[in-house]
Image (tube, rainbow, N blue to C red; front, side, top):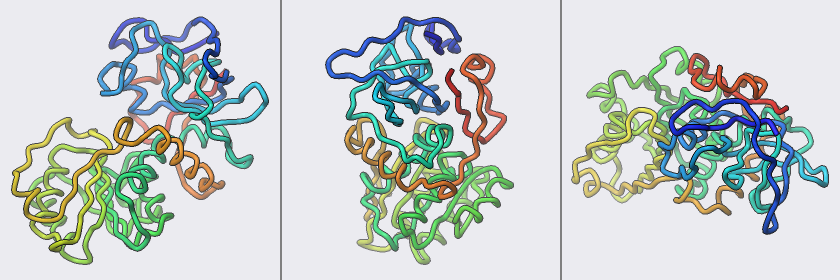
Length: 319
């Protein structure tokens, strides 16, 4: 079968032939139709993501859309290595498949699943979000952040505050439901003061952090300085697009009711992740959540793998 294959650690996947998968131990065979290119996919392919386990050669891709032998159209996640989603076929256990609504097309389902699941699981599984609370999305101009704004509103957020570096992209977030937009700038004192105003006003209940690094430091410090006594601030760490580490004074953790937690593979159970995806797909009626996509044939994987020129979600159509 044709697939996107890592032949050497740290190298860009190539389009080529790979052995056909054979289901074992109750697995099901999926004929793949679409798979999105996510930061998680890139991180696992390069070996830099904490959940990476594969040794070359292996197929890349953590999730996708396809059909089972009985014709059922499904979204699937984490196929058995060395197989994966960016191939004509793959194998996965049935509990990691979610049936798709008839009116949700393959490309949209593939594009929305990973970023949408990250926000859905972070809010519901980790933060235990309740309608009427306020949400800050740190790093809201990327595809995951834009979906997070929409999901927070869908779940009943009273206010959504969005931060980002790209000023033009930040301005466009009001149309997606952001009530307040704040430029990160250099992530310094001005940004911290803006965050203190938000924490000290109506308040922020949940932070969804896609960046880490300096902006996350300033948000945590501002929350400690301006957060309301005994009102828990749940800071959920999802991604590290800005930096892998932060430096945080210990007083930040002691000064107010801040809970810092992660959300992702390992911190959320597989049942929780799959359940979040299932709820997301049911909510994603045509037009419910807006996500920009760009489609390519899988044979273009080498050419577009490192493309960061567009904020649209890249989806490979297979075959």
